[in-house]
Length: 89
Image (cartoon, rainbow, N blue to C red; front, side):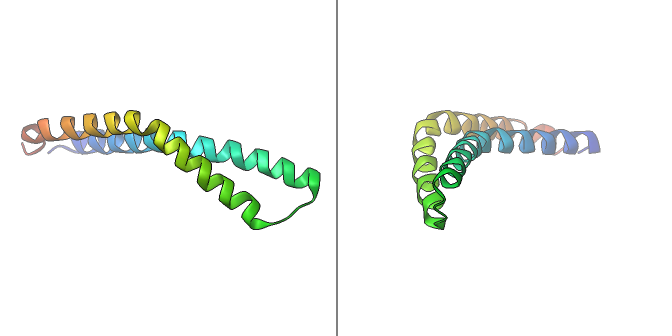
């Protein structure tokens, strides 16, 4: 396996990981900012006020995005398995 092939495989793996984590991290970021604004406006500084809604919203986002996430993971795995003969040369 050439160094270029290893770098290409690692790049694809990292891109896939980032693409899969983006929806959940984006939702968490938006909810965190909104809750921080609410906390600043109301001066309520309870840690559970940010933690519980983020968990609930991220769980909902994971359920909504699950078909797309599975499609991307299955596609990556299929490409990986189909390219094994090229990787071992």
